[in-house]
Image (cartoon, rainbow, N blue to C red; front, side):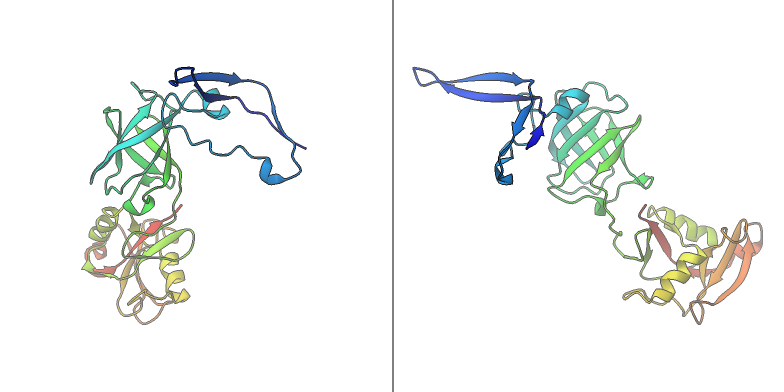
Length: 267
């Protein structure tokens, strides 16, 4: 026998004598016992996710008092606009909103009920990117003061032009043309990525990933601070194990021009 306790609001439609529908609500606060020997009968079917203030709510949403269901009214190229039920005047820390994404946006912000625009952040500690969300997904966001944090779904996709190395990071398939170390840092930062470390470059190179190009034909900048405090290294010319000069950030060597590629954290 299987027991499941629910605290739900059920909507019933009764037909009056004159044939006009009348709606009534019954609040069930007692346990509902599902005791059929057939598991297919121990189900509550056809209860849709609430999309408005008059629809059935599950126990969790009633108890929390902070779960708001939204309908996207516009998804543009720079932001997502959502109408919430019930209406939200002020976003408090911990407020959780749920909605279904109707189209893709290249932006990283959301506006709820016409309020301020808030940035959406990925759990890895960066603004979301277009590849993090897909059409028709159910999106769950929690307000943490000044921004919304993505709770679900947590995607592990690489940005365009990157190849997944493992569950930790992606690496850019092609190297960038020569530039100084600091310019290389800025280029990666502009993509919400970072300059690869020596160990990341070495691991990806030796793994022989299909589509990863020109890893061993030029010297490339890498961040070597894990091995040398404030260290900068050039690697890859002639083989995956090849490394050459290590510079300090205070030396003029960091202004030499080298190729480079960026890495992108998935976690």
